[in-house]
Amino acid sequence: MPRMRWLAAVVLALVLGGVLADLARPAPAAAHDATTTAHAEVTGSGLDAKAVLDLEYDLLMKSAWLYAEAYDAKERTEQLRQLKINRDAVTDYVTRRFAVSYAGRPCTPTQVGDADIRVRGKAAFAVLTYAYACQGESGGAHEISSALFPDAESFVHSTKTMVRYELDGESGSAVLEATAPTVKVGEHQASSQIGEFFVLGAEHLLFGLDHIFFLVALVIGARRLRDVVVTASAFTVAHSITFLLAAMGIVDVPGAIVEPVIAVSIIVVAVANLLGRDEDKLGRWRLPIVFAFGLIHGLGFAGALDIKESGSWGLLLSLLSFNVGIEVTQLVLVAVLFPLLALLRRTPAARWAVAAITVPIVAVSLYWFFDRIPLPL
Image (cartoon, rainbow, N blue to C red; front, top):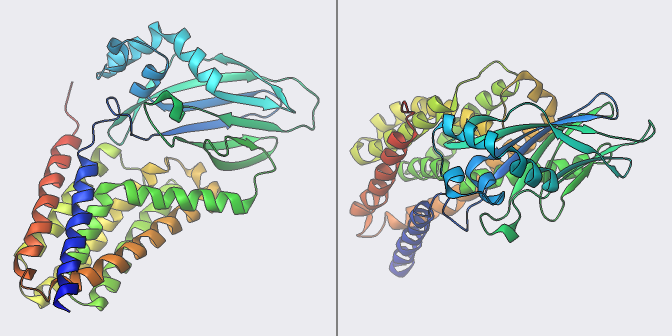
């Protein structure tokens, strides 16, 4: 049994080390192993269509083979200037990688207006609008294809394009990737949609280090299985509430507020684990605080799925699939971490183990907090 307990300590150390190593990776502009998600909203009432694309700015400028002056631009004004003077190069790249067709015939794209910039999380995204002139007889169907930011470009890997569409009298959503780059309106099965957004939700939790850290901090502070179940349930209920309220357009909080508060939530829960000694006192603060911070994390999940208006409520199946993906992944992580912590608490290492795991989490979260505070340029 002692050997199993020490094994649990080693496994936990490796898990934490892996998380911190992942955090230390370079930013997307300099890395070859980063990932990104493109966003596309395609609408149309007849044969012609309009697509609004959100593409991560620095990756877009690198993929269009522009100079460092363009992709290293950080200020909004300069980014807009670079998009304007490099309009042709950007349009050439995007229209070769993103296509709309009708009845098997490619539609002709034309950029509409000037590009804009919006912030998603901490990254700047270029907002590009294209009009697609399509030909053919009525009764056909549109197809949407995306090969944006492929692995072959070496800047990123595993890029996904989240597509929402209202075409041919139908509305829906899809996740396009290298293995399935095209969606045909009217033929996208509900089962595929469920699977796509379930995986997207699972990946968001697994690769969202702030949510992982919060979950780890919760598990560290729970000494009984009942505590884990109650705490995790409170977190689940809370973030599901704000997630769905955002979908209905009732709640809309800017990411500039949500992201720093998520970092604060990790710090509060982690520090409480270090200071708390009385189990009864822990019980008094844990549930209401976890619930309150769960509401904030729900807004973070909504931001990841680009939920920003009441129209998103029409994508109910996608929303629920995404949320279930988050929940299942959360349960799996708790099922793995809690038994390891239970074994660890029975070893001589228990006294310093909580601090050894918690202090790095607090340090990284403090960095996130200051890094996420929007500063005037």
